[in-house]
Image: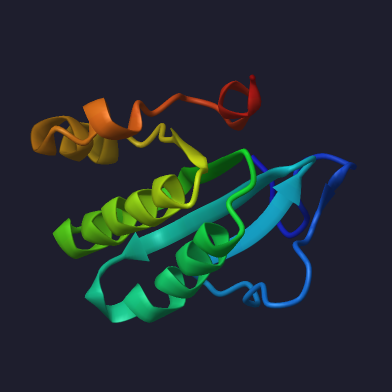
Amino acid sequence: MHQGEPPEPFARRLGDGVPLPTPYARTYRIREITVVELRGEIDLGCAEQVDIHLEAAALRPGPLVVLDLGRLEFIDCFGLSLLVRARRRIVERGGRIQMVCTHPPTRRLLSLTGLDGVFHPVRTLEQALEP
């Protein structure tokens, strides 16, 4: 869908303290919405690189944090636990969370674990950004 730069001209990087993009995650803002884009394979081996982005989003959640899994190829149970923990931190700090997920195996895993009822994934970033 988009590579390198955020997908819209009004998207911008968060202020100081936002982690640099990694092969597994990057964080940016569209209006007042924080977007954490996850990509590749999320498992124990990259947990630290992903959790840095999730924690940064939870520290300043704004009105909404979007977890964009549109470029995700694989996530294991450990990766799912990172998402659940991030959701809890965001909600505890007064934010809301939305998830974008199109990858059929990931959607199936969310369904099998009951997390589709927690995250209510939508199919596009545009849908996630709607009020």
